[in-house]
Length: 532
Image 1 (tube, rainbow, N blue to C red):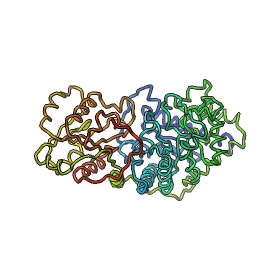
Image 2 (cartoon, helix red, strand yellow):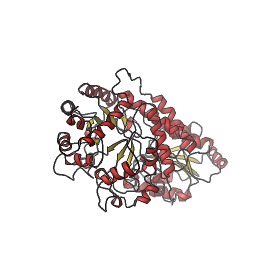
Image 3 (spheres, rainbow, N blue to C red):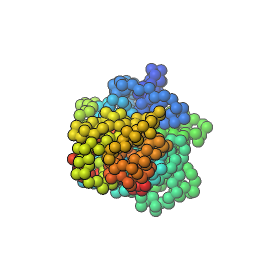
Image 4 (cartoon, rainbow, N blue to C red):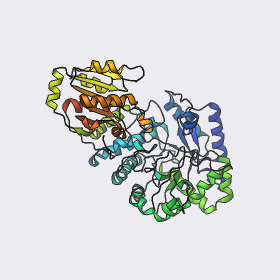
């Protein structure tokens, strides 16, 4: 290859599964003309990070999975060098592709006891199998970020928790599962995105820690990953002034952070990939097209993810980079391609999606992750009250026919209520209708995983919960982010609080069985919370 062709290998532009034929033809032309190294798949242009500002409506397509497979075949056919296909699939293809298996969020896996970490390995393995079935070789996951800021707008549920040892251990299990299935993994977001309160899709988060503090906490999972030969590390769009001569320069553009800290001090010689270069924390820094791509490469990135200025970026690197530096990055990318068998034409892909395997795995995770937060209940008194028809169920943000409620109804004949929306709901009439019940089994299906606007739980729901906890014997099962727990007023007055994490059917059924049979819970909260 010429130097220019080698530089093309550094570029992984974004492609969109549900794109127009015009866009697809333009990408095929780019692949042929510039010898790009790989592609990063997203569902659609509306669902990419830039949607935060444009607010374009996401059009869903039940055929996205087959379309993804067809596009991968099509793009590979027009590439003179096999493309390394990548996707961000932290909790499975379902993160980007509808009608595909979904696995639990990292925060849910973080609730598993250490002795059940084999289940995290199985998640990595299953996700890798699903990716391979579509023709994808590289998962931009998992997070090595430590969850040490409950108000973090973008990490939260995507992290394994706030214990650095557990984050490191579980991230390595996830990576091992993927590696055993022949898929590349990626630890992100170096040097640690956990203790930030700005979404780097929109602005530049700043870490105030010094190197010693980072070494003791944020960097710990990355160091463990390096010791275990992690395939790649993604650099986060976040500033660390203490490592950068006091300047608020994004780590993605900092030689001090990539070359000096990651490469020289921590001894990492694997693939370094930038976070998406379309993110607004960096995308608006330079007026000249190609300069951002050059600055990111010059800082030490080997792969330029979601590069938007491919021709200009290639030219800028060609004009400014040394041949030695170009060959270093080229060699790392080439080794990754060799590892996944891109040059081995005899390798056939026998992977296929298995919803049954996913359901069985999710059920095991549910059984071992469900967490008892408060439990002061006299179970015999509860059963007696049920026989006397003094127990009712209340489902919040789900129809009454949800799996949790239905499973309980198979054994207990308790009346059901539900509030799907607070709009036009008659709270006064509802309170009157439950006045004769002694116990309330409340299932709160938290509307959103991110903390913005109190997880989109309505104030009217919080007011209702406050009253119910004051006046009734309440058992609360929370299906969602555990950081929602401290927002519930009077929660300490509940007789029982169970954190269930996910609203998958398998989690609902396991939570209902926990109630009916009074099972012990082996899960442990992965984050520290202060209940009101």
